[in-house]
Length: 359
Image 1 (cartoon, rainbow, N blue to C red):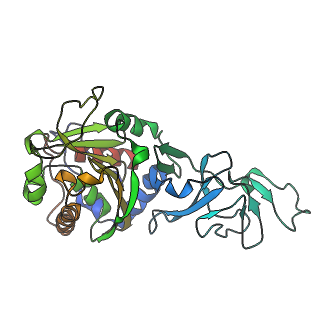
Image 2 (image 1 turned 180 degrees about the vertical axis):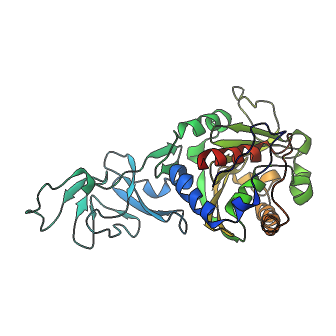
């Protein structure tokens, strides 16, 4: 199914309601968008030591791809399939410190770079081993302590990281520490793209987030689009916490309370003076989405203050709105809306990317 969103936002209509309720479209999004984009893996805190491994399931419940992260004897981080190339057994079940990866099913072994090393009872097998007997390696990108992987990415992740580095590269990312107490898991009764639509505009802030609106300078709220992402900048009211930018920063002298980054297709990186809050969007069904929150703290003295203060309340308010919109777009009386050229450029950019990839 093909969709079209006009490139001129003043003439454009939003995605039709069928996008948010059709199972075939949902399945097509999985194949053409999520499988061909980059995904958040977390930080490297579980791989501080050489010869260590850490298994993950990528977008569990949707892609559900078994991934294995390793730090080899050279200190390099690798990302590979966690599936044995013999009979498909899952290799690693938990984090460990090992020199080799050995399958518990029949003993096939690999080094920490994913290369085949040995296999019992295979001395008579012809044309063995082959390249396909090595573990499949996924493209990996490291940004400070944070890791991103692509299953079959259709673009260079540097295109996304470069504009982020230019704006928030002054932050000491290596000093950001994972705080498990800030990890939350939500189940939202709505289509995954509706959650992104809501995130991608500050238009609703005065109407939905009264407390957040009181600490932000809404009139100076900014949205910038770039290849593979959207940046929203929340300006702080005069008495509210803001970043202290170095002179070389393009934002030097500005009172910025938050940098809200959306990374295509479903990752949100929210930078506050205290650190980073991550929203990971996992589609489950046409009407059900899992949202995982993670927190990485840099300055604990700033926790609970300003725009990065009561995030639980903001999240609850957003979920109620998104679930209400999901009911609305399911109605037979609604099809498409229009965009505000001053407030919804981020949503328009998102919809344009979706229609481009699906076509």
